[in-house]
Length: 248
Image 1 (cartoon, rainbow, N blue to C red):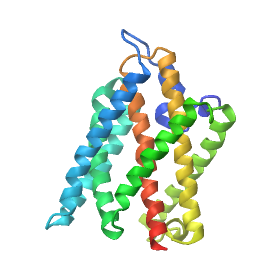
Image 2 (image 1 turned 135 degrees about the horizontal axis):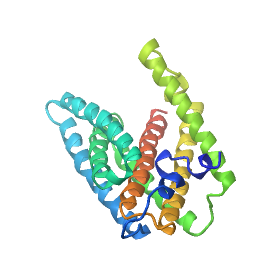
Image 3 (image 1 turned 30 degrees about the horizontal axis):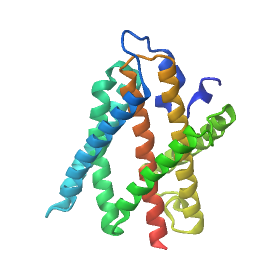
Image 4 (image 1 turned 180 degrees about the vertical axis):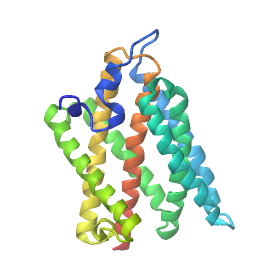
């Protein structure tokens, strides 16, 4: 139970840093920030490609890229989690693959609701900076109780999403309240956005812990990778929430 309480993000558990043995230079917060910036640039680069492709005369050509990016990103994420020392290579690959997915999905949402992609991006980064400020000022602290609450909520969301996916694949039906633009549907999306935002606090805490523990230099890439996982989730949930609000 103690290990579970250290992070709701499976990528950034404290045990991940504790198991890494320094062999030279050590992890720093500034190095992790720099590498997070690079990963964001990689995401933007491939997202721009699928965004442009979705606005071409043959927009359906974007779907193979999105599908490939989703499958490839999932595989590379698993590899990165189990082979942290590969993260200097696998983390950029993950970012490039996820960019393919995000660019296509953003374009699809933006066609239905013009301007929604820019709004979702702005809100995602706005939330990130607010959470970072709250963490640095110790307004919100990653205490044991805080982590337990976020773990419970994140786990519940994951279970509901998994059940909904199984229902969609095998029974061709879904939990209608997840996508409905009713007050309940909007409330659920808002709750998920809040939980995703709170995960950022724990991510910041785990990165700071890794630097304090003197984790090896490659863990900067691993920490940046973990933060990207949360940011991508937050952005996707922002798109869902804004689309529901627009439908009303």
